[in-house]
Image (tube, rainbow, N blue to C red):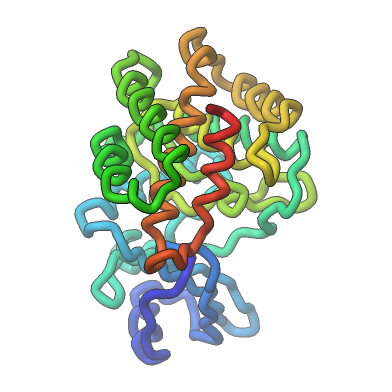
Length: 304
């Protein structure tokens, strides 16, 4: 959650008047991440200071914003630990600041896990399945921006920056991607990016899931595969079987996988690895990537 958009304190104060949540005490940029501008914002009413997160989205259109607001509000109502956007005095949760879609969220408790254990993986799997179930009642939708056509065009664009062996590997996964899209598997609204840095824990208790800006309509097993890749891999790209089994068991405590989903999981893991290799190559300028694509190349090689 890098900072691409800056503003004056007076401009922020004027924006916050739409909410009447208190006087501005402080605004601190959040410098991690690679896509949106995020700030910790503290507001005071009498002697009470409340903490919020201001998110200025750098890539979405105004037409897409209501989908994310509806999704987060629905998940919060269903008891999923997500930050429901604050509403303005006019009842709007999707707002505009600095000419871009913007949300003001309550700051959730907890921290991103630095090391991962089986219990955390079980909770994440369970939460992901609950998220899928709760999102099924959202009436708005968003198409998948990372479908086969996107992957093919992006790999064509980036091939010259890849070693020959990695080009062949990713081309093979691309072919698999096209085959998987033809399968008739359970679909729904997915998180799309449920990595460790998008989850908050206090000790071993899940307290928050954040960063829903990759949410879209996709196969549910693809979302599970993306989550497994991040939570269950080591620094060499190898899968930890205990963590993977715990995460899947957590998911299946809510929704059982079909036989076809179970058989295709590793293939979807490869496709998930392909996506993040490509998006990380696209981040930053030149070879100064904001996040290292090699992490997911290692996973793709191990799964290949």
